[in-house]
Length: 322
Image: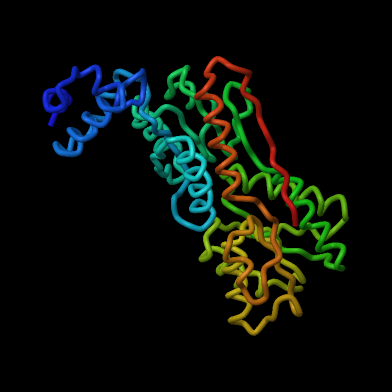
């Protein structure tokens, strides 16, 4: 069914139908009601692609995440979606699987389909963005290493938060602290490890290489790291896991060996995913307001969409709390 059929049924021009559907221009109430009745009877649905050719807007934004599995990414998506729907936008979400080539392919695939993008990719760099994105497309970078100032960016204080974890544990008397890291190529993981290392040096704590065990942010890798930590001699008295999922895996490994937290070994995570507060014991963690982080990224993008030639994009770092 086409707009011409709607116009014929309502006895008006196609331009009038368009103005009614787009809620633009002065239209008499009687005419508007007649057009709406025709639309309902004919079950007419405006063609999105055709409309976007005219308006140059799709009312859709692209969201690229390293993965779309797990509580952290679900919360990020929830925050973005809440802000998007309030402003009449839809989101198109895809994962890059933490792969640079996949990230570039996704960037190219979304061109022309969205009005702007929120990009959270640990492997992307300025060169890849410049090569695969139109210069005029509004973009907000979320927790990426790109710092050339060409795009609006939003991140969290990973280094400061990780250092605060180590200081907290040292304040409780711990001198030998194991660190379950995220994958080294991940931007957040590198910053958290750097912050922890800095605090360990400043406090003259045990910095043996064996105390750093690499994970991949999954519960399974946390479980494996927990098993390895139990084999260390002397055994660490505390563990800092670079995200809550790995901390949960560690907790399971410790429990399975009859090791109690926090009586026998202290455990701290990072992110404050919703599940963390329902563990037994509740998990000590770095609180990142995850859904508000996504919401803030969307609001920054909406600002760029409303004034594409407005103020210069800037990087914003959000605080965290232990």
